[in-house]
Image: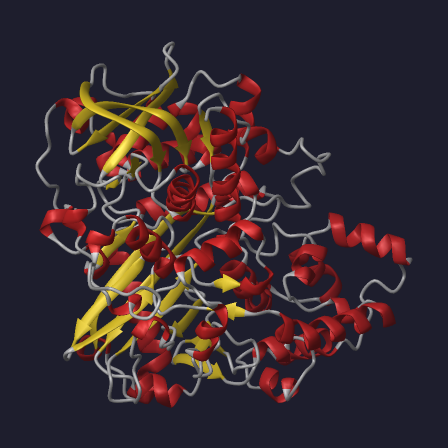
Length: 629
């Protein structure tokens, strides 16, 4: 069934439940803690389980503003003036605060506002405690990609924080498929009698490497589909042989990968799902929203079948890429980068912590984040609803915390929040800039971390990662086993272990635009209760691990679901977006400085990587310190 735009919008309003609370419930009086929401003083956010990420209590005020234009009519004007106010405590926001301190001095008065009960944005830490051990996993942003090739701003930040990519590599001695493309990564296909999991390096199999033929023959698929997959993986056929080289290029830019797989290769929907599972996890959409060229550039097979030149390029790319593609990973993902920035700016948060050497095992004191005696403060559970320049040359910032509307002032403001919210925060922006800010739609994801009593079943499975094309979570993996930052990962099958389960909720809809299906994916996240996620987790793990003695009722000891409805920055797609001249793309128009207000987020760089977030912060701080010293 096709979902109309009206159905979609109505579904969001109905499904978001608490978002239908009227203004009086959101800011008419100081609110008591809502069930499921953990105020800072009542808990330690990294160790909270249940629904995390975009948790209840973090989005209602922003949705009231963005969907219905509602915000408080009056504010208590606090006697607080800052040199800089940053809206958003993700990587961009924290980096902007750090860079401002570096330029102006450590005594600069900085306030960072964030609507969540934890800092880090997508770089969230998930922490479990079981059998006297602490176990870690990531709740979003995963790794540093090619950190030795970072630009000046990102390289300097790593240096400032004491992060040494070579030292990180030394802590990643255990082979793991999240960080090593040469490690076995399985394929788990659902059947009426449980999952059939076929081991081996499927990233290599898809490019005709290794024992790909017997691996494909082991999949529970009809023989004709196995034949077609073997033909595709092996590069035995040029599917565009009647086209010239230039015609092949045009075809690859204007036809979706799934259309190519269906019409040229002859794959059915289930066989396409094997390839789409990879695209969903790594890129966000299915092959219906990616051109053939984009899918091939993302590592999908097909290039080697387009004549000798394509085969040569595919062999070169697959043979060289794993050696050139460096991944550095902390046990809690990029949350360590966020924590190190907070530690640098607010040492009181963990006074006995040295830094890079022991950051992974450090427990932060969240009570210290927002003390007036500090030059830098982080005010959590605080949703910005208005940012504007004033006639006297300052910036007013309005926000709501625990139902209380407040107003503060600053010399400068950096908006390190989502692009789509900025036109509502700053209605005074020029209309073309607001239109540009609305253009992109962030790509949604769900990351679930599951604490298991022991790792016996996962050890018998024999691989650290497997793709699951028929399941809600398209990939499952053990948490990164790195010792970086002093962490001690599980060392044997009897130790407790954390399973990381990754899902892209973006649906497969032929003919629908990427931005529309991303909105549908976001809608699915907001309308799916924790109980549904829990059932999906239990059913999937039982199906895959049950053959190895796993019992979900006995072995699962905790579940944390990280909802990321506004995930990856929108990076444009061949099938939907034109090729803009340099400087005229929506993200470039949208990030323009507006007086004492600058924008820093991955949306403004149109790339979701950590170095993109840091580059955006550097640009914003350069704008403000150059223009208004």
